[in-house]
Image (cartoon, rainbow, N blue to C red):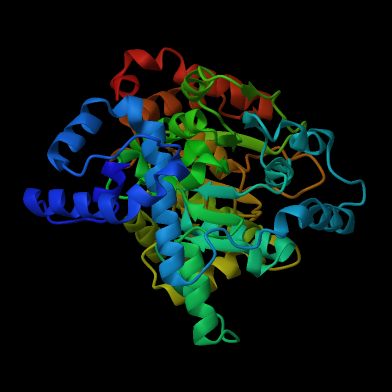
Length: 493
């Protein structure tokens, strides 16, 4: 309690002043209210802040839960009072959640939820790992698993977060959903919103007061580094349901932070749902070491959607360009994915005569928003003319886009399967054509992906060239790539 009082604000490290401050607070405030903490002994008025801090630091593991609880509650109440908002808004929403969710389900799904989605709320008190194919309905599963509790839905890419936010708002209404990422203040601007409403929404979002928070993972996960004030994030997460979508899309360093954060939160009482189309084996190993974690059966689509061919040349090679132009002449909707912005820009210039579209993260927000909407609309237009979109890994996760054919630079296998999911996505029929709809090109220089994983992915994908990749194939390939990965520098990292 003494430590919490001294350090709930960032103060000057003046030992004498801190000691005086602490003694005064205890005398003026705590002595009269100590019964609220079940303290029945006299509180001394002479303290040394440095001794208190040293004791905490020397026994940090022992004090961890108490620090998160006491200091986190103090931060949350303090900030909420200063901002004149509720610490947790919309309490009535929890009672309405299931009614709202099932009203939407009944309106949009004639046959209702799939069996695995229907069972999700039965596991709402447990932490879960779920591997499910693209398009199988992981998002609806997560909504049912949240079951009216406070929830965080975390993704790695801002464009995917924005789209997921729109999806949640459509179902659960704007007053119940917050959006949190580096540009969320701009994203929330609404022409019909007055300045007071905007400030209130922004404040509630930053204080994580909404019952549902859609965010980039860094907004919550970085608290794993225990910076000053981290207790607020940990406290909020400790009574929340944390959904991490497409966990394989994160870098090895980010993935390590996510796993440690989820372990910490699990010990504090929070629950997590890790769901993805491709779940690396070592993630399963790390998280299954916790109590009350369930690895659900895989939900794999029986559809045949992807016929691949690997090419031992660069995507900038003349032969690669000829393949793209040939597909364009056949009136197909083409997606080209490059590993870097500069490569995407070069490809755009190379195909300029075909009027390609270009999307990457360096566009200003206004232009990027228009392009994001256009790529989603144009990819689904089955009656349109031939079309080429050139982009980066920006579009890998949780975007509902559907192209006829994909030309892509090789990336790590988990990333590759996410890219596959943007091709032949929303089709009822199997892919039965005799020519490949996924072309993979070798990467000669790489500063984006882990080198060992990239090399292994390329070697193993070549074994499946000129053949169909099913959802079952994908699990086999992932096992092959990650087999004995602990013996590499990646595993050590």
